[in-house]
Amino acid sequence: MNNPIVKIGGRLALICAVAALVLGVVNALTEPQIARIKAEKLKAALETVSGGRKTGEAVAVDNNPVVDRYYPVYGDDDQIVGYVCQLLGSGYGGTIVILGGYDLKGTVLAAKMMDNEETPGLGKEAEKASYMEKYVGTGGDKPVPVRKSMLTTEQSDSVTGASITFMGVGKALQEGSRFVVSLEGK
Amino acid sequence: MWKEFTKGLFRENPIFVIVLGLCPTLGVSSRVINALGMGAGVIFVLLCSNIFISLLKNFIPNQVRIPSYIVIIASFVTVVQMVMQAFLPDLYDSLGVFVPLIVVNCIILGRAEAFASKNGVGASILDALGMGIGFTLALTVISLVREVFGSGTITLFAFGDFDGVVRIPGIVDSPARVFVLAAGALLVMGYLKALVGIIQEKGGKG
Image 1: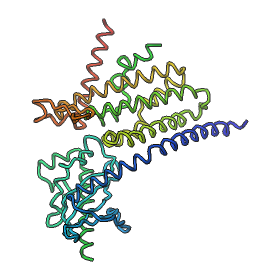
Image 2: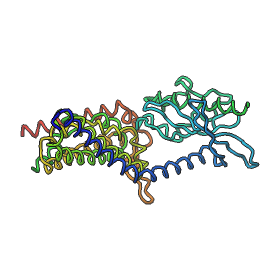
Image 3: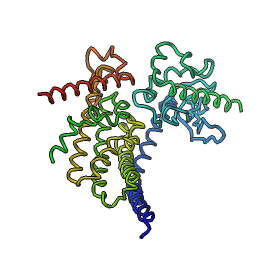
Image 4: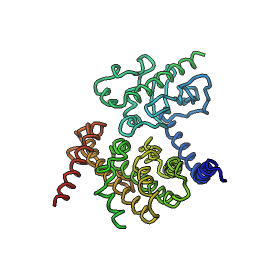
C-alpha cells in the first residue's frame, strides 16, 4: 500500500464498488415495478393502436433495423385485418420506440410514441395523440410525411423546433408501411 | 451557519446569480410540474452528494477527487432515476433526458468542489438545501411565466377528480406560443435575471 498509485486507485475503486452495490440493491427493488408499468403501458398502447381489436402474439423481426417486432390484428371473424409494428426510429435524443397500426395495404391507422429521450416541450410533444394525426391515412395511397414540405402550414407549425423527431417518426412509420406490404406480398 | 442556507435562496441563487445549471433550466421549464419534479430530484442529489463528499473529504485523494465526485453524484442520480421510473412514471416520462443529465448539472459538481469538500457535514447540508431550494424556486418562477403565457395553463400534480391542470381564462385559447419554445425560455430567463440584478443592486445601495 506504499505505492501512491495503488492507494489512489484503490480508494477510487472502493468508492466505485460501494456505489455499484447501492445501485444493485435499488435496481433489485425497483425493477419488478418498472417492468410491470412497462407491460401495462404496452398493453394499453396496443389496444389504442389496434383500435380495440384483438392482437396476436408478438413476432420478432431479425432482418430489419427499423421493425423490431409485429403483432397481427384480428377482425371479428378471426381473420388478420392489419398489423401493429413496434418500430425503432431515430430521434433527437436517441432511439425512439413507436407503435404503428396498419391495415393490410400499409396505411397508417394509428400511431403512438413509446420509450424516448426527446426534449420536453419539443420532441416530446410527439407523445400526444394529436401529434400523430398527421401520419394517419398515409402509407397506402398517400406517402408518409417525412419532410416539413409535405405538411400543411398548421401541421408544419406543430413540428417547429422538433424537426428531427418529426422525420424520425415519419421514416419509421414509412418503413413499417413497407414492411406490412411485404408481409402481405409473401 | 444559517447564512449557508439563506445565501442560495436569493443572494447567491444558482440560476439567477451564479448562472449554473442552465441546460435543464431552459429545457424543462415549459411546465410547472416539470420544474417541481426536477427541483425535487436536484435537492435530493445535491443533499446526498454534499453529505457524502463532506464525510469522505479526507478519504478521497486529491488527484482523483473529480472522478470520485462524479461517481457519487451519478450514483444518486441513478437512484433518483430508478425510483422515479418505478413510482412516478408520468413525471419520469415528462422530464425525459434531463433526469440523467442531473449528473452533469454544474450546480451539484460546483457545490461538491467549492463547498462540501472543504466544510463539515452540517454546513454542507445547509448549503445543499439552500442551493437546491433556490434552484427549485428559480426554476418554478421561470416555468410559471412560460406556462401561463405560452400555454394558458398551470400544470400541477393530479389528485382525485382534479386533472392537475389549472386553465387560465383568456389565455388558454390564444396563448403566446413563443414562451414554450427555446427562444421564450431564453427571453424569460434573461428578463428575470435582469430583475433579480436590479433588486440586488437597489438592495446593495440601500
